[in-house]
Image (cartoon, rainbow, N blue to C red; front, side):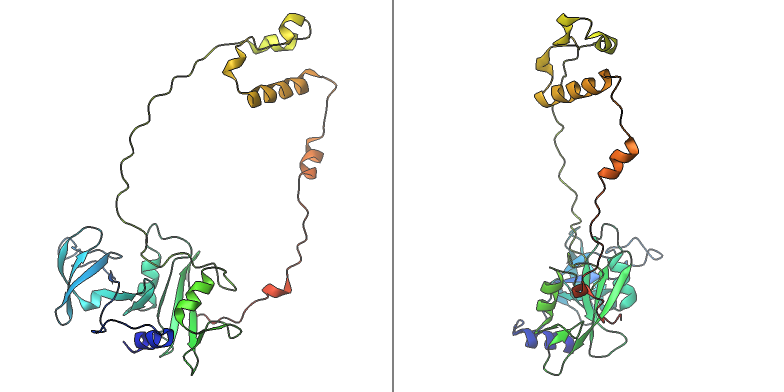
Length: 274
């Protein structure tokens, strides 16, 4: 792959001696088709390569452990977790819209509309695509005001701050685990001590000095200090008939009136959607 070689050269990273190693294969569509037979591999599965059979891959699923052959047109090779080789815009959107895919999941792929360029595809409310330009010196940029020596530096930057993108990059596409969560042992049953009390007696607490100290007539050990304080505050408010307040004014006083002036530093950036 010429684009991959360019990425490796610009980042100063060396691939294996064979030059064929990738992190995994990403399944682009169910294989075989459900119309033919139950699929062995499903879209979005990650496969580990066993061997290259000339247009076919012998691979094993990292989620199910099933081993079989799959044609090369049904998979994309993935390098460094997020650099996808062999898929277009439509397949990128399908993978990024799989269930349980998080906002900010992303991939970098070769651009379909501009040969020799890359595209950054990001899951947001919808999938957004940004064109990545490459300078003659093999530096990269999405916005011309900020260039990067390699794609890895670009990914690291936008993983820390959106800086004009739709959102911060969170995780590479298909990194979500498909393993079933471990069963959790059931919690031991909890028995609560209950004691009934009459709330009507509360209104007569001032008439009964002996009961004023504990108007609920319950063991104080059943309540935390904070709960007793909350109940006491509630009773002090409801007990005083002369106490009144304007709810509307109270809600207004809680509103935060901060400045809505937008900083000029975060002005719109001339990004190109691919």
